[in-house]
Amino acid sequence: PVPQNEREQAAVPLGCCTVAGCSQPGAGWHADLKVPICALHGRRIQYYKGIGWPRDEDREDTACHLCGGLDTGGASEADETLLLCSECGWGWCAPCVGACVGEAQLQALLAAGDDSEWRCMRCDSSQLDEALRPPPPAVAEGRAAAVVAEAVVAE
Image (cartoon, rainbow, N blue to C red; front, side):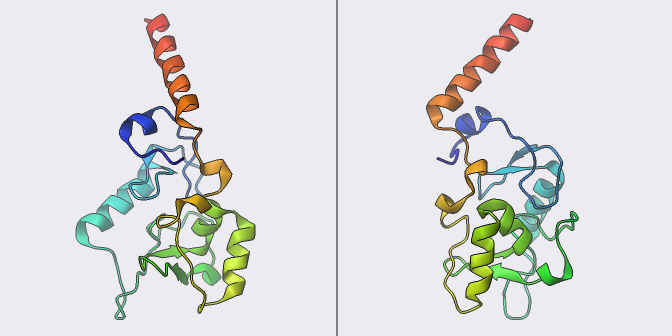
């Protein structure tokens, strides 16, 4: 139940940025994952989408599709290798994968090694950690109605 359109997204509180190590408030929704992302990471993603995603000589991503390669304090030198999706080929850094799917699933993925098949959170949103999943639409619509009612009362 990931918010798919602007109406559903507007009804769900953003919380903090999903990027590992980032504690900035969410300023919008990641265009591909539909998870909260701060303004800084959102600008980096939009920048790369505009000029083309950075890739190496083998045409593999060199920047994570969630954090855009910005160091937020959550990454270490061991995390420089990107996990590549078997379906779309996009790269994701281990801290951001862990922030999206949970540490246990990340460790299982890392233990499986490079030869294992893995579908990223974009290709398989069902693996997003429960904490990142927005409430069902009926609950979200109720929250949106409450926010609108509070705004009307405040006027």
